Image (cartoon, rainbow, N blue to C red):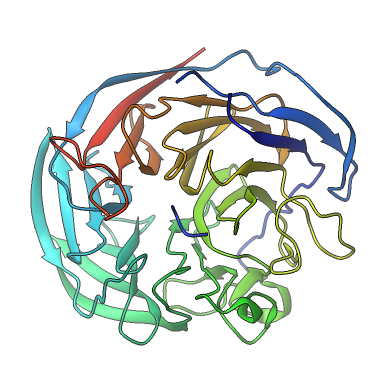
Length: 374
């Protein structure tokens, strides 16, 4: 039985409009409800998902032999682009075949840094661009790449100056339904960054494809929230944004994101009920999670666990909990890094056993195809 705490929070994001180190049976954390400000109340009790139990099954292996896969994004032709953290390479996966499409210049890999997130322009192929988040020798950056004829070219850095270190680099990027690019960053191992309004560390960014502050951002800043330790997961349920975040030693978090809010780090780790700071809607022992990527599908946020070596299915609706999270595949495939919803409605799930912290199995690292049903 995994250790965790699920907190139903009445925190709903208002849609913005244009104009820790990652270190058996399914686990079920205890459940409690919360008051509108996110503070936990009442005693823990068990609860069943209101929308019906979700069922996951591994339908097969999409690809093998990828070295430290980190980001994954689908193209309109249903093929996928995958980043390799340490090599700086981008791979294309189609029909079970893996090919190189190029190497991103200037990537400087480290314990947790390197070539990280990737996102495809919402207007692709009219705008034939993909975007990557990577660590250089000086900082973390977001760059735009031309992707045509199966190859990347014409790299253009659109944003630089995100704190970089061997740990806590953040790295997930995702386009929102509003057409703007969202990025989760880490504190770069320097805790004050998360509360420093002038630093891009420990924030969730919302930017244009030119790297400027998106219209409607609070105070016209590049970021919409602060007080994060290390955001590596972003997922949308309509206009509601969720994030996954590494805790230090006690609690990993899933947060429902409200623009302009402070999520507490370093004063808070997990549910802390501090004035002026928003508590997570879910928290887990770092041994049971150490989350990286998340994806939304069928009323659930699916959260990949590194140290926890499991995939969490977290029932949510509009920024609130709707039942008890359940863990799948515990210990079966090793460290799990990224989960994305595929065009056919399945989930693609990557392992991360070649990152220096896992037990490498034959064929690692791999992409698994997971079916979702009720």
